[in-house]
Length: 174
Image 1 (cartoon, one colour):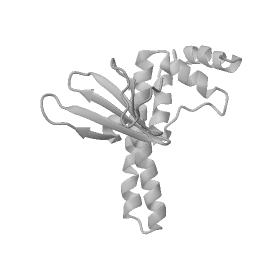
Image 2 (cartoon, one colour):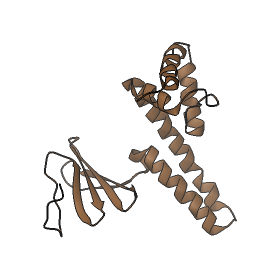
Image 3 (tube, one colour):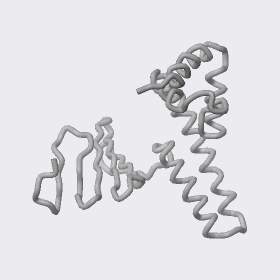
Image 4 (cartoon, one colour):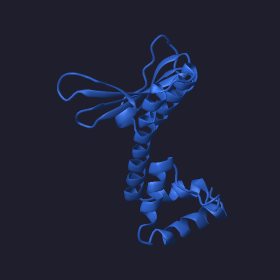
């Protein structure tokens, strides 16, 4: 369901995006601060994201800018680690930055393991799902699968052509 502000945001963005350099300026804001400037609450976040995701080219540009910001955040970790402050606080600051960088740019900062052999398999591990862990798999041919593990169930296939498999439990969890 969209409200009036969301609809106006999309229409306004369509008009503003015709101005030379406007969208690139918004992307520069993402690169610097990690988010699109909502003009002091003038625009709704939902409307902005819906507008960005509504166009493949814009969506890719936004994700690339967010990846650039992730790199900036990751680079902030070195001076923090070299500082002479509270070790626990600095470790928390570094861990937080690297976890966020891993979400914003999984290809560069996400946890992954390269498999050996023909083409290899990339494994991406997402531990931000509460009591469960999501594991994404991608082979050299671009085939993908995702698995969620946790919550008393050893494994649930999230997106693949196969049926979910569970270990350690005999009953059906449909």
